[in-house]
Image (tube, rainbow, N blue to C red):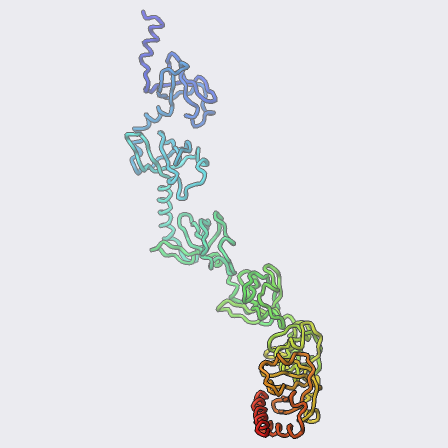
Length: 556
């Protein structure tokens, strides 16, 4: 008869590493489960081999694989997963030929993808999880899905799965079905999948459609992201279906009535309207009258009188403004608006307020090379041309007479309403002295004055009655003068003789050297001056005087 020790030793012979045996749970711990397999010592299974360790209870029975009969603590090392793997491998190979499908539960995240329990461990690459690889793989742990077997390695006993292929296959089937049944005019529910500069792609449950930016709203949209967000659900209208190219065009604004259909009735020309400034551009401002309807206020329609360089100088985006409807073009979907029309056009009253011939006063607001601008009232200027500053003096630039901010008086000469111009004159405040020049000056008169201006050909002398006379360089001295500035200076007092009066050209010729001439010398010189053609420039006097000098030399 066998002793107890001999019986145990003999029974141990039936247990071997790599063998699958039945085990019963005798204790559940945090990190392991203790199992009795009928061996002399207990076996241990790591807790991570159980899907839900909390569901394991004492008395549970299942097959386990003996990995080692004794570890350093004298316990048997067991594996429930490896037992299942070995038992399931043949069954899996039968069911899961490459290309077949199988259900499984995501077990853990590993480098490059996920480990899935399908009865045996299988690998699911991250690129094969979904059509768009998820950013957080951990969120899938514990979830169950159907997978396609794409590769089986018999030697290494590993399996590669794909969930993406099943999804794409399912989408392709749905896409074909949708293309067959979808018709223009249908309203479909979809999800914003992607947003681009030109529109958004909408997922119609397996079929992507393009919602172009121009079909999103009847109004102005700078970018699709102003209206849509990725992941947002919305109803869209099917505009066109191209079955050959598998393309679907969608619309959002088509769900609403076109606001331009009755635009003339809503906004009659001449009516005041209110709206919000939605866009400012160099040439004007766009005003939203209602969603889908915008009107343009051109920069020239902002003010009757002010020169506005850009609309942003007077308008701010987002503000509410009033305007007047000027014109409507329904075909081109354009509304022309004006803001200045809210006020009376000051040019309509200009003729009544500033009739030609009236005297007006105001400040010099601006000076240009051709004249000075005088402010008559806010936003309304009159222009004094350089030729209307003085009857007698030659004004090259208005700054010779006026400064910015000067208070002056002038006479209204002309009002041009069409071109919005008012012409003013200062010299018209007094009589033209040339009308009575014969009573003021005669040839031979001795006159005094100050040098007002120097030129290369002579000097201008200011005389009484605000009249300038010209002393040609040849008439300064009996001796030859090369440079006028060497003998005369601006502001210097001089005495000269009137030697020429030209009413047509409104010029008086003076001679300093002739101030002491005798009457006989003047008479000789007058003959030479009379020989000049009417209207000839006083510069030509040089030649006449040179001729006189030549005669004098001959007589001497």
